[in-house]
Image 1 (cartoon, rainbow, N blue to C red):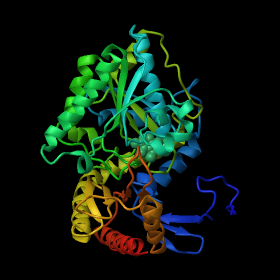
Image 2: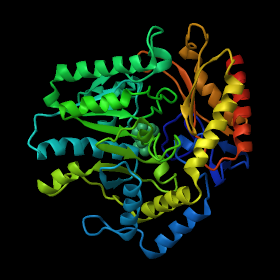
Image 3: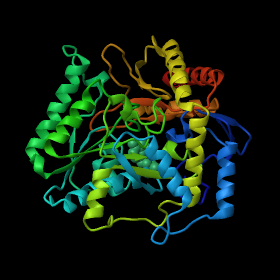
Image 4: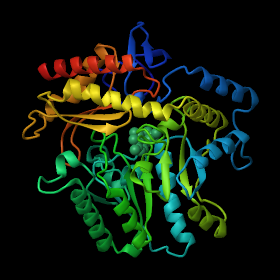
Length: 444
Ligand code: PMP
């Protein structure tokens, strides 16, 4: 059966719902049915929908100037947004490169890493190391560093060769005879082994999501892991690229998730919450030394897209970031995150089919298991994650399901990323509807 819509979507065999309007944390479809947007789309809509300040800022920018190509001009609004981002970035990050989304940000960061080493006279560095069970985007470079076997499979012949090491997946991979710290050290030893095999002088960068998102339902790093990764990279002159497209821009309770790890990357990708979905925008935040190498070398970054630094996208993102600052929303994410954690614990702490609840701030993952004791997953043929999504949608709730085979591992996960403006009552309603959806999906 083909979809009646003419727009070519990912799903071709299911009729699409039409989203007609959005207000606050609610979206409305063509039949007038409303949905609580508990996943912010895909961890995007941090201010919910229809925020008047963002809408007004976009209107004002349209009236003034919609677009000017960056080979001719920068704009005041792009520079202002860059100032806001640099003023709030970890020390040492001095420049911003604007793109239109997460995959573009990752592609740009990979190319920055390569050009950096060419500029400083180390052209032999041509390897990236990344992690299994990660997601960095769907363009070819981003897909190559990503570790989601299912997404990569048919495109493998087109992908650059990337070495993948284990992700930080404490619930599944920490042995009972080791502490969280020891587990982290074991992962860093594995990374160190991979670097040694490639030759430290041949590696450009290690790429990782600070908090994993779209692959295994929110993977939080264990204490000390990223500090040790940073030290290891420094020892070999390897750049650290942290992908905060999903976990960044306040989602975990600090503007950047890496702040909680006490590390500063050389390059950091951001997107989703940067523009909150009001416009497509992403960015790479870069350490001064990377940009200085370009400046002192060829004088240009050999890359570019037509819509870099789009004025309306920058105006939307600037407004989103100003609202977050003005309304103290980072603090609110921490508070509401705590509340959401408690609600999830109450609803699922003893649930026979919830193996793990994890996350930070308003970024939460739920891992479903057939059996809690053995941590055995449900049969993937049941597509439990997809059933949960359908049951949730039927009860007016949007959640982000994950499942399928990931590097030989299966699993059903639900990701929650509600808007920062969600009220305590809305969070209660989200968890109540989700509990119903999970129980109905498991029973089906
Ligand atoms: N990196 C991460 C960590 C992501 O979660 C995503 C999107 N889910 C991307 C990159 C790709 O972003 P986009 O879909 O905007 O291209």
